[in-house]
Image 1 (cartoon, rainbow, N blue to C red):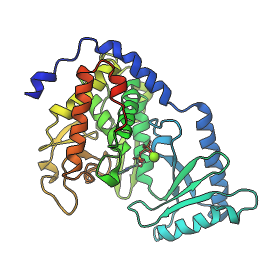
Image 2: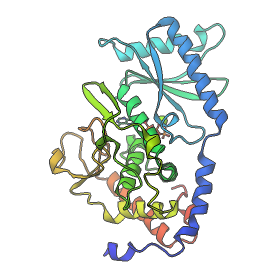
Image 3: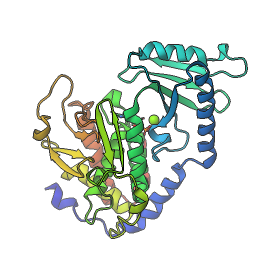
Image 4: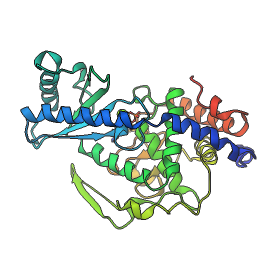
Length: 340
Ligand code: 3AT
Ligand code: MG
């Protein structure tokens, strides 16, 4: 019933792209913001290396994966070669070293230390720039998946355009809160990559199915893929779909076409795979697998596992609302992004 009603795209869909591109442009961080983030990282590097000369700092998440909107916090991963390290203790010591009272010339405000979280972090704020930053320890897989997302973003600019709109929509509609059972920004970007791999002609390739040119092993997981993406900048050129068509099709897919009962989206394999093949058909503990998004490297990890029987309803209703707006609303670029 749904499919018949919405598969045909509205006739003015192309003329809407201009409005979506204006929104996209308004979300891109200015160069000065990037410069300030790099300065902050260098300052942290100097302070950390005084205490731990062998430690290294890496940016990860949206400040480094090309999907960061302006005024985002930055995510920093500190790596240190010590398998026995107690991350919580280390973070508390780090917070102590970095905070205002201990530094003669400079000091950070420590906002929070989340030492019991799945990924323990300290949150701190640079008082001169107001930039907040989360520091975690030895979360190298996140640094590697950040690189994968950044590499995909270089292949076709429609990925960045779509992901910015989708992330902005998710934040405006309150469905970007993992602690409330909805999806992370990382999950939404993977949904966009998978969606563009599936277009015909495809807009994105599947980098992990190609001859690897980059390979690292992290936490016993082999992460390898083709990363010479400068060779792929024409990849999507046979597909002429515009950003508004893609936003329309993205929400239409998640509202009416995705097989929630049986399918897992997999950026790693560039196609849908079955829940059965991954033994994700039953609830185990808190993992319900009501919407399945395979992590590209940690393939046992379903990024949809945070979604419960209440939040799946909220999510699907929001996908349907978005699809209806893209189909019928006279000003979808406004209505779609209205706060909830
Ligand atoms: P925002 O712009 O901050 O909303 P983000 O890209 O920084 O988006 P998140 O804050 O969701 O995304 O996560 C920060 C990074 O941490 C992104 C990804 O490299 C990693 N990450 C997040 N969630 C997971 C996860 N469940 N499994 C593995 N890596 C993850
Ligand atoms: Mg972030």
